[in-house]
Image 1 (cartoon, rainbow, N blue to C red):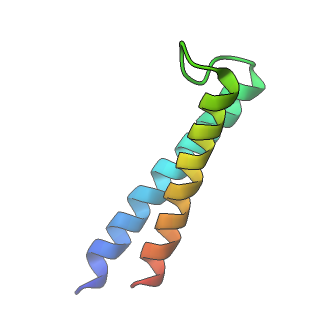
Image 2: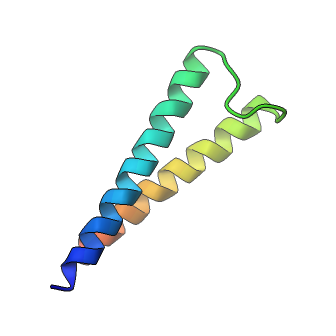
Length: 65
């Protein structure tokens, strides 16, 4: 019964992190801005870090089930 919230939370983190990393990669490949009005390298690094962190949190949640 306690594993239900961990599975849900892990799924949300996995979808968010994967989606953010995929979106960032597509924007970089198209040489488009990741965030408007921000240094392109810095915004790509922050988005990549956030996506990777979300995926690591998903793995952590899934190991708690």
